[in-house]
Image (cartoon, rainbow, N blue to C red; front, side):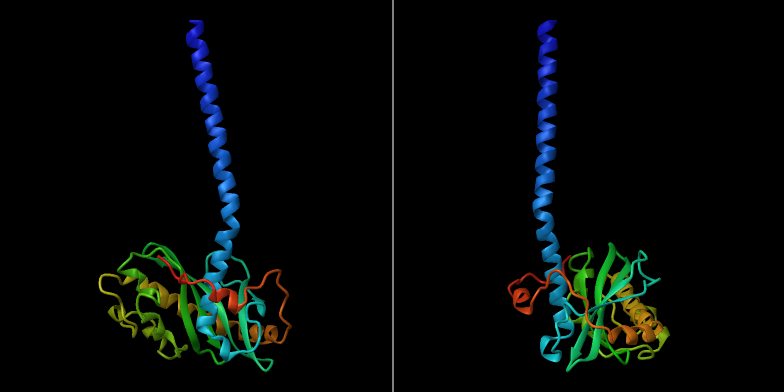
Length: 233
């Protein structure tokens, strides 16, 4: 009986040590990779920014020239909106807003929407999604040129009722076998334009403020060193 009890205790101790070591290893791995994951996310976001408003079109440090705007009621959460500003000769020429399409086929679709001061779209890029490969992932620029169909659009062009996919009476193409994904992106982009119009006065006021300093800056040269596409499925 004592031998059995001793064996059980040893097994319990062994399992306990294994659990502690395993848990510690996982925690250590997460701690080591957390900063790298964050850095990769920042690089992906930064690459998308410079795709929407290329470096040759502005002469400020767009990654540091950030303004804070009121929370967007149409977006998940209630945090203030961070917008990147592009300037030339000291004058703002456009800005890039983050956006979220909460109703993608497989969950949230995160976007960046570039808008000039007249409310026209400079470009749209998807930075994160989990849509179906081969179907919904055509919202990525490396899979199709669909997202470029937003360039130059504005509220009223097309009319509000046509901000939808063609299947639902809109002007934007849907994907074969995948309508939910492009429809979600179209609505998110339209909502960004509505937000811009509703906050135009605040935006103009904030654009006259000097850029706030940031602890860390990703230069265009550093971004160019990464070859991984900004979008992924």
